[in-house]
Amino acid sequence: MASGGGVAVASLWTEVNRCGQSGDYTRALKALTKILHENRDDVTALHCKVVCLVQTGSFKEALNVMNTHSKSLGSDVVFEKAYCEYRLNRVESSLKTIESAPEQTDKLKELYGQVLYRLERYEECRSVYTDLIRNSQDEYEEERKTNLAAVVAAMSQWEKASMEDLGLPESTYELCYNTACALIGQGQLTEAFNKLRQAEELCRVSLADDSDQNVFDSKKKVKLTNAEGVEYKLARKQLQAIEFNKALLAMYTNQADQCRKLSSSLHSQNPSHPRPVLIQAAQLCREKQHSRAIELLQQFSDQNPESASCIKLTMAQLYLVQGHVTKACDVLRSIEAFRHKAGMVSALVALYSHEEDIDGAIDVFKQAIEHFQSEQPGSAAHLALVREAANFKLKHGRKKEAISDLEQLWKQNTKDVHTLAQLISAYSLVDTNKAKSLSKHLPSAETMSFNVDVDELENSHGATFVRKKAGKVVGESLPKEPGSDCTIFLLGKLPKNYDPNVTPDPERWLPMRERSYYRGKKKGKKKEQIGKGTQGAMAGASAELDASKTASSPPTSPRPGSASGSSTAPSSSGVVPPRQQKPSSSGATRKKAPQKKKKGGKGGW
Image (cartoon, rainbow, N blue to C red; front, side, top):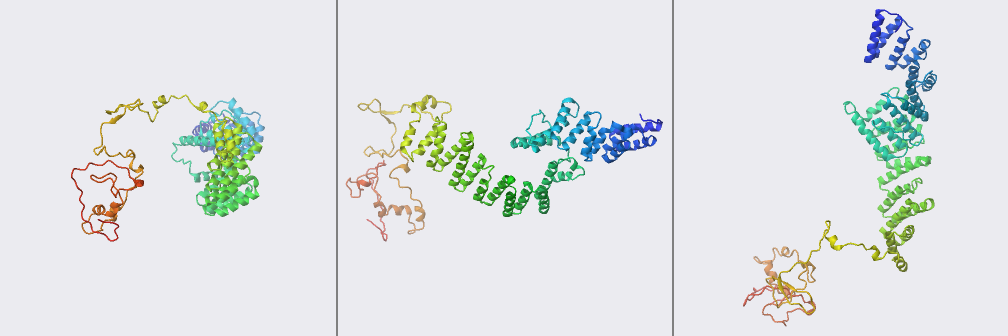
């Protein structure tokens, strides 16, 4: 207890205790000031005052109290002093204070890890947190693991250190987010994207009960980064990323002048960094100034060849937006780092094919194959390129050019029947003898045949067609022909107009459109005749009575009572096969109405 008793001091300590439990540190300070007025060297009261000042954010005042009463307080407030120095961004002083402590307590180690992280001494920081997690068990274990994950992410992103599996859980959005950052540093973007989605979902769940929280309100987030002291909590690259985001936010909120101002400032601070120039180019594109954007990117690419890859990819995209496919291909082929990558080859072939520049696409394949032939001969990537080149040439009718590729593939695997067949097909246009020689390597029909029961296959559950057994035909049984083992059956029903004296049409089983004498329907005939001729005349009747038309259309079967040698019969070269006709009634005659002779008619009665 504090020295100097009395009822008043005891009641003040009660007030301090009550305020400390309720978190009302401002009222606790008032009570402590009264206690120190009674005894200014009360160590307990001084220590409590320092804690209350730290809790209210008065770090400078707390540090003044500790420096003024350093003899009284001694080493009891080492942690508080180091913490105040850390929060005031006096990181080096905080490190010295921690290292001079007579005993390294857990809370000092926690602060030590934070200081090392701020100083970007990540390897030492990781050792501190690993030791803390291993040797302590309390309610702050999850926070320590989050901090350790942040250290691993920083090492992966900024020091390109290999990612070590520390067995950290991913139960919170902070842990998932840090894991995603580490994966980004390793270039594992797909896995990082999945982790970010997981972190986002966990964040939604954890903040679901907070009705005033809007995690996607970017403007509010940017305002938070402007708060006092934020710059002391973040690393240099984190502060740089915030400035980039401010410029992007200005662009997306149509603040063009602000975007240009921020991106220009970033470019002057980091002249070799490509991101400020990319933001400026994006702003120009939003203003429909694509040509100026390309000029800006080209200038930066020439001045900074080490960052030219991402810049040229953006230039190619802008050319494609403008419809300049050939220029985009030229830019892409100038990127040496990606020139022979599978993705780049695929993109270039697709673009050249779109422009119908088959020679350009084949040249892309040729250069890529030559590169792999010298660097990685026989590798999976090399053979895959050769196969794709061969298939592309065959697809576009360049079989002669595909021969060398197919031969290379077949030599790698002489059992590849598909490649051998393609090679024989290509040689058949160039050297038939070579094609015959290669065909000897094809497997025999017996080798390729399969022991398949056709009947069983047709009757299987998945068969789409089943051959039905022949059923009995009901009809008249005719006598067997000499030398024949089968009986001929005649269907029971005959057509009503069947005439046994007339030879049936041999094409009667074919649809009308497929018969040799089908001439098609004459469309629009009735329509053309509407309103023509005398009043009351019918188009059908006039056509029927037109001798010029009937003369050119011979009957398809003999008329009852007509002579076989009639002069109106067609010549043998144009005989139309007879058809089944309805039998005429006995003594029936066909009457024709008298017809007026038309002008220009070719015939008449």
